[in-house]
Image (cartoon, rainbow, N blue to C red):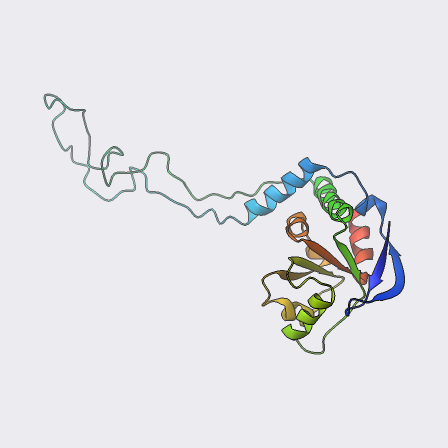
Length: 209
């Protein structure tokens, strides 16, 4: 599929680029997308939750009442989970929520995400640009030129560009990543995907392996 190339003023440069059908034109695999997004979100969890169990609660281990003759259930100590202040039964313990996915499945998920965006016509190809110094106002002007100031957008750079990244950092609705930092979650979480020309070759090369 072909896509016209815009400049950072939102004007057509008169050039077109060919987007690989093997990356931007496949039939999306929803289950692969689900697994990759699930893994991304799982990796964001700290897993530091902890509840004290019976052996960890501070308190006496003295038997609080005699075994028989009270008319109530037997109880060994005040740390019994049935009592207020007692331990927690099968409470949460620190753990890692991460799990493994094959590289081929993750590539399929990213290609599916790109194809979804392409079918929705939410991909913009932008010629490479740079700022002399970090400037949020300049980045906002780019968003306005592309009519993205009120939309959630993701700019994908061919390589790390500190000035462009820092210019976007204060904006909640827009984010900037390099082509090597892309994730399926980031692609789908944006309303519009802005691909700089230098990123296309890297993306297609990485996902065509």
